[in-house]
Length: 215
Ligand code: URA
Image (cartoon, rainbow, N blue to C red; front, side):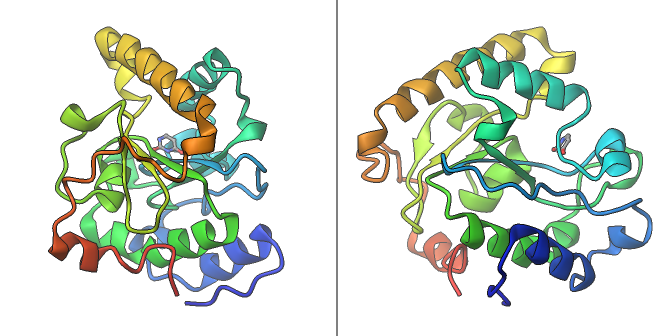
């Protein structure tokens, strides 16, 4: 994996050329952010939608507006955090990304995370969560931190888009962002992550995800 980039923009431009994602041919453009926040707080969504595809920026549509509100509720702005996606191109008709598409964007996200050096990873929804905590259900895991073999805590969250059609989950997301704030406010303990539930990691999954954030 190539990782010697001077800027995040350079990294994205390299992987935009050097990736084998089948969606590349049909999407308008790849979707990514180029600013590195000092907070180390990283959110990872599923895949871009129509607005993101047109603007080349993640979470700028309806789900993004709700994400902005959730961030505002805990005293953060989009400038304070980094937002990425499991898949960098829009799947047609907003269908879910396939395993193959997720796999072909995997090295790109790995390189991106290595560049940013996250202090906490917040997967939004089951696609991103499954990437870091394979086999766990988002419905049972949301609002809780998980240990990860990289040493970076993974805080599970529902995808903000679910709140657009399910008002109950809107409240759950607000509540979970409150839990995230509490977790971040005890930031001194962030990397120790003593309370994290690591029971989902069997030896097998540890081997499978060992490459995340590693060469
Ligand atoms: N949903 C996502 O998962 N990512 C985006 O960028 C926008 C909507």
